[in-house]
Amino acid sequence: MQKKNTSYETATGIIDFPLTNDYMFRAVLQNNQMVLKGLTASLLHLDPDTISSIEITNPIVLGESIDNKDFILDILLILNNSLILNLEMQISNEHN
Image (cartoon, rainbow, N blue to C red; front, side, top):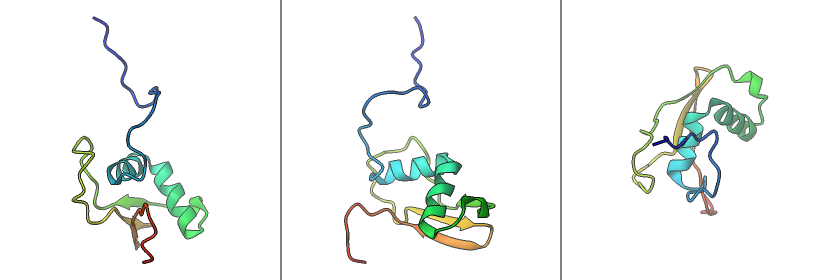
């Protein structure tokens, strides 16, 4: 029996959970430093090269329930070992 390749690098098809899902948002950003750095630089109007370090201080355990809504804070970051940032993803305008 041949083992099926399930690598995300070669995966194709529809993803049932968009990045507006808390789990997917966190999973992608904590699993890919380039994406995390790019998003942070874009939001702060920084050159990505000015970000020497970026650390998620509240990572999730990948593989746990994708429907979990117990998350209070999406992503807490420490930028360049000094600046603390909170990235909160909103799917609708709550006017706050």
